[in-house]
Length: 492
Ligand SMILES: Nc1ncnc2c1ncn2[C@@H]1O[C@H](COP(=O)(O)OP(=O)(O)OP(=O)(O)O)[C@@H](O)[C@H]1O
Ligand SMILES: [Mg+2]
Image 1: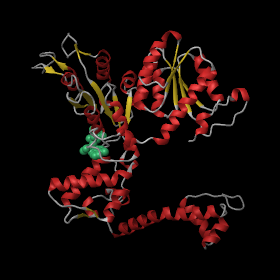
Image 2 (image 1 turned 180 degrees about the horizontal axis):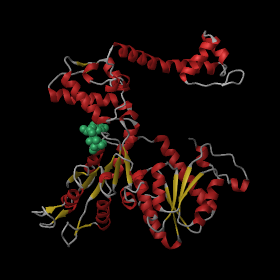
Image 3 (image 1 turned 90 degrees about the vertical axis):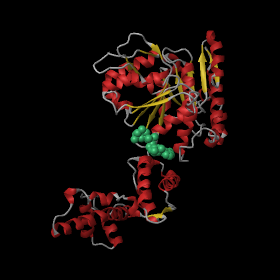
Image 4 (image 1 turned 180 degrees about the vertical axis):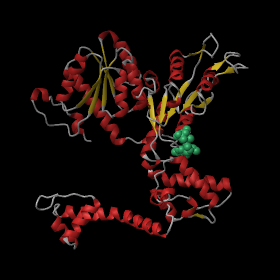
């Protein structure tokens, strides 16, 4: 980015001149009044900005979770989530995005408070298009200068207690940053990610870095208990409240009082329990089963799921109001296969850990063993890598882990170990071998014919000639591979 867009102050509305902005910055306008939204959209769009609008704070936050904006302009007074709440949430989700607050004259004092909460600027209504554009250009310039010199490492100065985490990839840096931003607040955190990506590690890091760190961290695995037990575990019960309630039991909400409650795999909670959970979260009061006296509770809630809750909401399996309540600050953990750059660090970390635990001097992996790990998809993510390496350290006979110690087969090998495919006699063995060979060469053949066709403008005769094949043979190969190209006569 350069200064052009930042200092762009031409009024294309006045000049009719539409060139300018080298990069279209996205601006989000949040206002419950359609007239204001649309009026501002026109002003900003005519300056070349890409404009999105939201009619409520909640809708705005959903947009911000999915998309990057250069600047957010929000009305202060809105029903539901107001401008200050929007501002505070943005300061956690995308702290570097400047937020401009729009206020009525009567609420200028609140605007000053908004500035203290981190707003970039404020505008009092009614305002001229010049004023809003001037403030917007300044805010965009601010974003641009930040983007130029921004370094995650600076944000993550030492002492944040991230020693349990291994990984320096951009994806993980985003996760660390989000943890640092959200930990000091009391906001609910929704951790998503495939199994074994480190969701529980994140939950603990949020707690460790929060002011509640001296208080309990209580983790509840919502899959491990049947529904009725889960409710009494969470909310507690009084003696005799149901058959089998021989003693009173303190609920985990109460055990976590003052600290953090981590609900793992929250998607497994039934709709009935979801309703009860929502009430507790809304009222911040808890009534143990069989009791009539509600008691206040003070917990910070962190939840995790490895399924898409939004899809569950769409299917009616998860309450939308509960989803909105917990989906305030999402932290998404990338699967290991999408951050392979972290593999060497993770391998080093786990080899060191298990060598020490097992009492062996294992120094590294043979090149082919490393290649297998580098090509592996890790459906079970970091946990799977951890298990593979633990087993390998145990099995390994020298100082170097061999490919066989990993006990990992390539996907190709796996495909033929299906019991239905194991040949029963010599004839079948020959047939299986033939199939394996054919399947192995097929991708190479495809690449070969497609590149030849491409080089020859999809002309079959020329492609055949160039590759040294007879035209009918080339044609037959295309047919076998299921590739259809019009020939020179226009036939398929
Ligand atoms: N970035 C990381 N650095 C080091 N270890 C990690 C990392 N991510 C995960 N792990 C390790 O991998 C294992 C799985 O992590 P964790 O239990 O937090 O994952 P999860 O997402 O909660 O998994 P599941 O969905 O199966 O419950 C743990 O032993 C954890 O210490
Ligand atoms: Mg877990």
